[in-house]
Structures are given as structure tokens and as C-alpha cells.
Image (tube, rainbow, N blue to C red; front, side, top):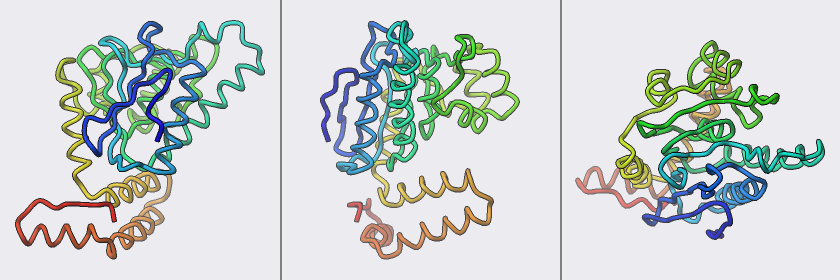
Length: 264
């Protein structure tokens, strides 16, 4: 996996955890065409080969901004054809992110507006700093959410709340996001990354094939009826039985030691 990009930073704080940082702090970490290409490549690489990454943490460079969303200065003056071409890159990125085999934790350090909020919504779950703020502002600009916002926000906060937030474009706080079920935990800014990485390490220490199958099963269950969801869960479960990790997990439990999962 290529870990050198123009608009994002990739860090490996431990062998199985990867941190992705939006890295355009001078432009509020706004997403231009190059960032779309960079993000698309990261998720494509993880889809093809996780390179032993078992958990991905996403945050923004700097202390006040997660991401302001689409770079409106970059978009100013675009023709319809150019706008659609750029958006197609982000559409592909969203699909690849949705199919990312490893869990994605968003560490929302500051403002997550527009496409930045939609990116956060696309994560498996979120931790946020006390100063984080969220908004889907697209309707105030004559467009609408186009990176999963109208799908993911209703799942997170409920349909009626999502309609209000999308129709008005008004911002909401980390506390409100927590109360509504969008954010899992709130931490002081200085503690946010440490706490997020602790969780990422916990996930990374679990059996990676089991985590991957559970992620797939949850995704299917959220889109299917309960009977179909359970049938998929059983198919995913049965694939765990012949694995080395299943044997290791049971053996380690009986030997009263920590398991050493290899992803096989």
C-alpha cells in the first residue's frame, strides 16, 4: 500500500492500526479533487489488501477542523461537466469506503461540515472532542448531500431529526450528536486521539477475520429483513469454524492466556 499522498497523512502507530489524517489545514481540511483521488486510492488499496491493517482511525490535521467538506473555492467556476466529473471521484470513494473490510473509527477533532460530516457518518462509529460540531450544509448552497448523508444520518439520529438537520442545514454540537446517537463518546481534545487509539488497539487485538465477518453481517442486517439478516449472519458465522483463529481463541481461553490471532 502506498502511504505517501498529497492531501492526506498516513501513520502507523502500531502494526495493525492505521491513522488517516485529512491534511489541508490551511483550507480547513476541505476536500478538493486531489483529496478525492487520494482517499479513493486508500480505500481501494485496503479493499484489495489490508496489509495487516485491522482498524483504521480517521481524523483531521490541526486542532479545530475535522473537514469543512467540499472545497468550494476549488469548485468555484467549474462547468457542469467538471463538477460531475469531480463528484464521480467522491462517489467511487464513498462506495469503496462503505466496502472497507476493516472497521473505521472517526476521531472528530473539530468541525465536520458538509462532506466532512458525511465522511464521519460513513465511519463505523465516532468519537468526538468537546469542541466538535457537525452540519450538513449542502441545501444552504443550492445542492444537497451527495456522499451518503441522506442515507446515513437517518440511521444514526432517526428520520425526523435527520429531515430537520438536512432541510435547515443548521449546525449541532458534539453533545447533541452524542444525545442523538451519532457520537459514541466525547473526550477533551487532548485526550481524543489517545482514547480512540485505545479502542482501535482493542479491535486490532481481536480476531481480524471475525471482526471483518461481523462488520459485513451488521451491514447486511441494516439493509435486509430480520430473517434474511439472520441467514447471512449464520453464513458468516460458519466461515469462522475452520479458521486457525477459532482454534487459537478457544485454546487460549482454556490455557488462560491472551490469544495470538493471525487472521488465518
